[in-house]
Image 1: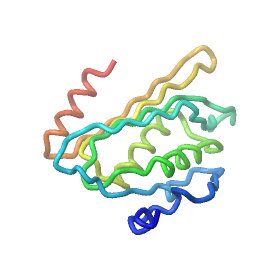
Image 2 (image 1 turned 135 degrees about the vertical axis):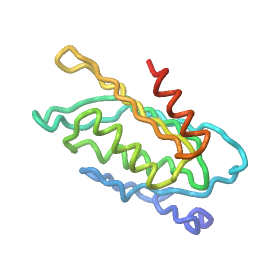
Image 3 (image 1 turned 180 degrees about the horizontal axis):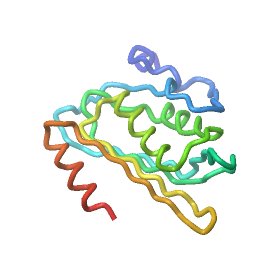
Amino acid sequence: MEDRKKEGLHLLGSRTEYHKTYNPSVLEAFDNLHRENDYWVRFNCPEFTSLCPITGQPDFAEIRISYIPDVKMVESKSLKLYLFSFREEGAFHEDCVNIIMKDLIKLMDPRYIEVTGFFLPRGGISIYPYANYGRPGTKYEELARKRLENHE
């Protein structure tokens, strides 16, 4: 556990404090030990909730995050607490997905990342926003373009 503390990870192994509003400051990162490899990391959060900014009614979704790390990786407990911090945040579905992606880019500067929200229907309509990013000037920028063009 001391090694994790040296890496700047404070949430792992400590008492969990849940934030009631959007809080990107809980995100923590650690060093990628396999920088020489391109590989995918995927997180699924099937219990994501936020609030409609107009009605205040809850919106429920599965959030899927996939990324190709570079130097830093997101620590999973901090990601969970970050995603939970949206529970009382008023934000449209598209905003949630883009905010999550931008916060993770700021934290890790990944080679590539994509975030999808599978929001449950409200009023008879499901919304599935998708956002992605590939580091400019690299093959990952082209990957982002292709995945966006071929996204269903």
